[in-house]
Length: 132
Image 1: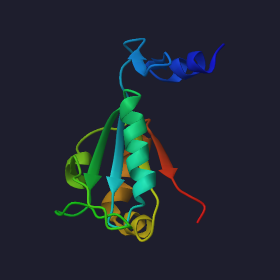
Image 2 (image 1 turned 90 degrees about the vertical axis):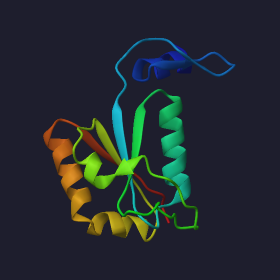
Image 3 (image 1 turned 135 degrees about the horizontal axis):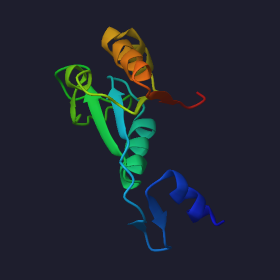
Image 4 (image 1 turned 90 degrees about the horizontal axis):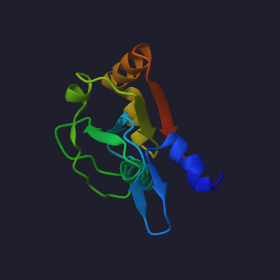
C-alpha cells in the first residue's frame, strides 16, 4: 500500500501528486484548538492549516475578548470564544505549546473544563509541543 493509501485510511483525502482531492464522504471530525496569549505560532497555525486541508472541521477559540497574540507577537482572529466552545462537543481538543501560552492554558479553569467534558463524551485530547 502506498503512503497515500495509508493516509486515506485515516483521512478523507488523498494526494494525487497535484494536491488534495476528496476520496470519501466520511464524517468530518470536530477539533477545537484553544488559543491563549503567548501560543507558539508555528505549533498552532501549522496544525490548524494541515488539519483543515485534510478536511477536518477545526475551530479555534480565544480565552479573552481580544484576538489571541502569539509568543512572537502575531495576532490571530479566533473562530469563537472558550464560552461558546464549551457549549459544543468535540472529537479532539489540541493544545498548542509556547510560552507563556501553555501556562495560560493550564491556568484557565475553562480550558480544564473543556478537556474534561471532551474526554467524558468520548473525545480525545492532544498537545502540539516542541522540545524547547
